[in-house]
Image 1 (tube, rainbow, N blue to C red):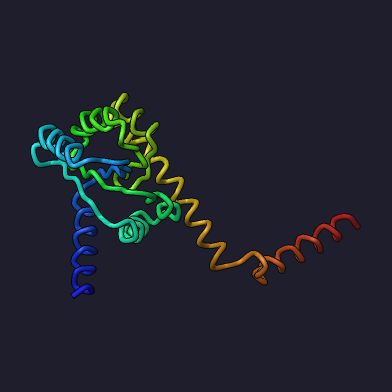
Image 2 (cartoon, rainbow, N blue to C red; image 1 turned 30 degrees about the vertical axis):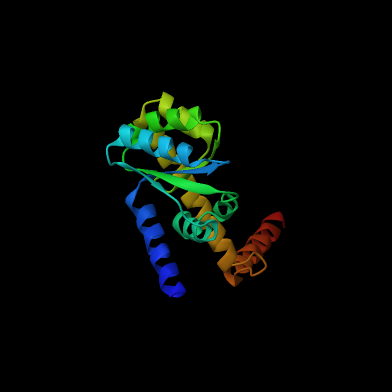
Length: 183
């Protein structure tokens, strides 16, 4: 029975992460039942169905975020009582952000915007600037990350201590031609 419950929770978590392009990870401190009710009601008023609040155990959330983002430090984000706010459309981000900022018992941890990890400063900049400009910036960063990942992968698969023999042959040839030219 417990195993089925874990599988169901894992599927629900994965579906939530796949469904919403924007996910805001929040920590709540001493949220009362009234606080939850008020927060959920305000979020529903803002979004009219395009935003959802999702509670999940931290252990499952850590595993799911690590698999979802492929970022090693995502596992350290889930400390304390957390929940996610999922948003399908960036148009709702500004009123949601305003609502989050108005609660003293909420702590912003991170935002996952199209699988990119954003800080509170990134979110504020995104909300101030034209979203297309910020999306272009994220795409440029993504290309940089792709290059970095490619180089890192090659270093892992072909360590530096394994020097290809043809490279040594080229160096030997250059050395011999330099000696011949000097004579």
